Amino acid sequence: MKTLKSRPKQGLHGELTVPGDKSISHRGIMLGAISEGTTTLTHFLTSADCLSTLAAFQQLGVPIQREGTTVTVHGVGLHGLKASTAKLDMGNSGTTTRLIMGLLAGQPFNTTLVGDASLSKRPMKRVSEPLATMGADITTTAGHLPVTVKGQKLHAVNYQLKVASAQVKSAMILAALQADEPTTLVEKLPTRDHTERMLTAFGGEISTAADGLTITIQPQPHLKGQTMTVPGDMSSAAFFMTAASLVADSNITLKDVGLNKTRTGLLEILKAMGGDITVVAEPTTGEPIGDLTIKSADLQPINIGKAQIPAVIDELPLVALLAAKANGISRIMGAEELRVKETDRISAIVTEFKKLGIAIEELPDGFVIDGRQPWHVVDPVLDAHDDHRIGMVLGIAALLIDQPLQLKGADSVRISYPEFFDDLDKLL
Ligand SMILES: O=C(O)C1=C[C@@H](OP(=O)(O)O)[C@@H](O)[C@H](O)C1
Ligand SMILES: C=C(OP(=O)(O)O)C(=O)O
Image (cartoon, rainbow, N blue to C red; front, side, top):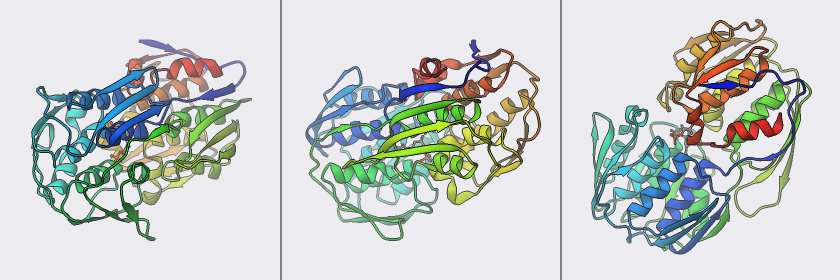
């Protein structure tokens, strides 16, 4: 049980560089592995999820070294992976599992994937079914892990994705690389496009049509290892953006944060709510990055619907917290995907926010929050529900309360941001 810091005497102050982006770190290892030559990733995220990806590719015969946050991947090419003698442990990572399924679907060997209790409850048919249209042979356990992938020769498809999910899209892209002809995928809504951008940087041929939804992938590329610095994770920066906005007298700067438009939903929402944020973009050739300065502000309520969800999916617990201090009623809808994350995040947020006396109502696909109601602690023992993002949002919520609160499962931050509480202390 961790005792959370309560309301600070002064606001949050100072400058911070948040750890590397989780999505980009995963993809850096995967694309590096199937490239020819060496890939060097600096500012790699050394959280449990990304280390699950690193270990899985080592087990597939890819030499990978790590020194601190620098990772060197000695690529084996698209057809150079080797069968693992043991099951691959995906740990808690949905991204590792879904993307690796797409890649292994076309390899000439069989692999069994297992994961922890939380990951073993998450849906995998959303990946195995679309992959099956390409000829993949994937057996799930009633739609969940353990999953066995029996490598097959894959054929190209023209496929309309059924869920707005970058993980499903990326699994299909990684499978399409191994197909016989070009594949076309059509997304329901644009989702994070790191796979597409990074594949291009590694020398692959992938294009997105003017509609922003139709993606064409050329098969059998000869990818070349790259050197890249992973941008700061917007999804980690988001915790401090929220804290500085809500805690009076704050003024912080977050350096080198990834500003890819498919990830900046929270930034846009915070601006629309009246947040005080200055963005100084930096010139880059790869993923857009920049520095963010955030000061405390009085916030207005907001309504969010389906089309806005993908760009803020992992930050929705923070949108709920912002709404809980806004001057009116906010509605967040179209977010049913939250129910199939590390925990049912809708239910977890409602349960934990109610312990703080927040006026929150659960919807099947989101929540309604009245930020005008004063908070009052009903139960000082909060629970992360074994979910890193729930644990961290509660760590921020505690800064808005005068009495000390306890957090069960604070250790869950290791999944995406092991230094979270230390970095928060630096700003306090
Ligand atoms: O592709 C990725 O790196 C991710 C995609 C999102 O999941 P979905 O694809 O399930 O929306 C997100 O929630 C996850 O944290 C990372
Ligand atoms: C949902 C998340 O990750 P994953 O799906 O990779 O477990 C997350 O980091 O919030």
